[in-house]
Amino acid sequence: RMIRGRSGDAILYDGDVCLFEEGGWLNDRCINYVMERWKERVPRGEMQFLDPTVLSFFLNQYDPEEGDNPLSDLFTHKGMRYVVMPLTNSIHDFAQTSNHWSLLVADNMDKKHYHFDSFASSGNERIASKIASLIGEGTGLGKDVINIKNAAKQHNSYDCGVFVLATIDFLLRNIQTNKVIEEIYEPRDVTRKTEELRTEILRSIEQDAKEA
Image 1 (cartoon, rainbow, N blue to C red):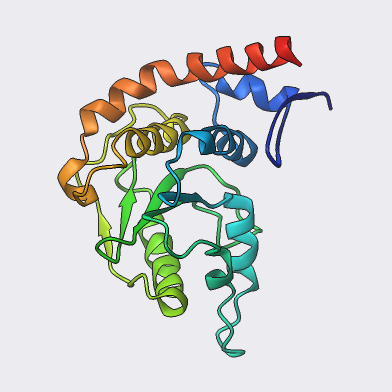
Image 2 (cartoon, rainbow, N blue to C red):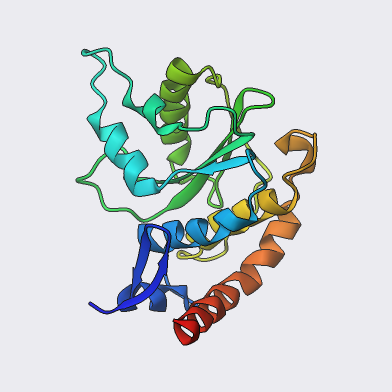
């Protein structure tokens, strides 16, 4: 496989880059690559991104009988305003095939978790609730999950990852407000961003390749 892009610890191969084209379902490398690129947009101390692969690994290591909570170890910066966690429907089970992304965001300001799902009946609410509960036990972030009912919705079977990234982009552009997520979230803004995000990312990958 040919490496087509690098950002921090994230690597994109040629088979990943084509997924950013219209009709592609973004995999975990695509999601993590973009988050790594966007770290430079984060004001100091405001947002921590969790690699979905790492989150899945820690979640699958959890054994309630042993009493240890490995998820709390992921929060290396507990003072962050937001902790951003892209989730797939298989994040809690390695044997299951991933086919849907949603986004869980922990907000340190109001000690709640917010879940954005672009497909209302995906079943990811249960997974988000489980992760929030485990995180709350070990970090003091709280266990409550607010499922954003007016979250921007996809109208096809493949754009869930793009909606996750567009939601993260929205939070980045509005991060310095003192209002909680429910007060600032604008689904129309997120939907508009999805219409241009694939092109923007492909253009940035091409530009990086020229500069390499």
